[in-house]
Length: 375
Image 1 (tube, rainbow, N blue to C red):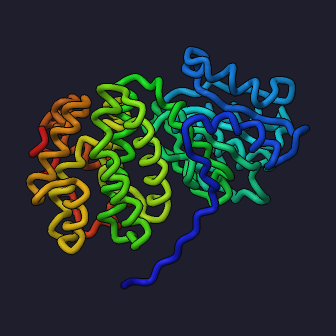
Image 2 (image 1 turned 60 degrees about the horizontal axis):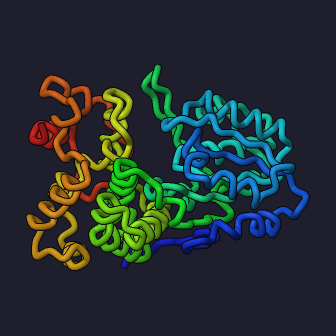
């Protein structure tokens, strides 16, 4: 067995109704008089009635709210959040929302006490000194897993660039995972977020960075999604939504140490050049790359087949194709508007640095063949 290290500092509070602990957890972290910087989505919390509950639990007199966060937050969005957080002289950052909200919250928490700009951070011009503000993250979707990771992503649609922030100081101090927050997700969002987390688990499982701990977590994630994602999306079944919420959190704990790779590498140009939603952009190639990587992980396939409930690789690929089809996730690039003449653009803009951990090396020519077969 190869040596490995494992550390995960985020405290996870999971269960239906645990949002009620929000105020107590904040007070436990920073005290009852602390100033709170609250980040939320633009409208969904108001529509669901959750925003009123959050404000009541935190106490509206001690917080500043920031909600101007799109699905793919830009450096400009992050700058506005950092400026607002500094102006509020916040003691703690609370994020209630999807992955984009949580990611912007992490950047705000990291830079709140620093004179570093967002541009200096994402371009790695200077290092951040000192601690970040403590973060309490409550996800309202079941996909990004940002509530338990030290990563954040920013997107610049105009320049077609992606910026990743990775810093152990942005591990949320507490992840408050209440499946009831995901209960009102529309079907499309449940599918997109679930496809994201499920794909991450497969990538993390076949990665050369994998360890026995990440393998155990990822197998549980795959099992939970295989049993529950369909019912979560098509029926909004409460137990299925709860299982997917747990699966997404476990996925993030695993991929913190064994990172998503080739499917996410493909997802980047699909989002930046075709405007494809993140879960769809990464999920579209999952069945194909499971088939591609399988010969290099033959020793790990029996456990994967067991949790999928399949007899062989072909049945597993068919299961993924069928599951994604039923929930509205395409597994053909042609369905996303990619044509034969576009395959070169996908290959050239692939996040190739992510493919270094594949168990089977992938060349540009290999990638071109895989993508051409998916048109």
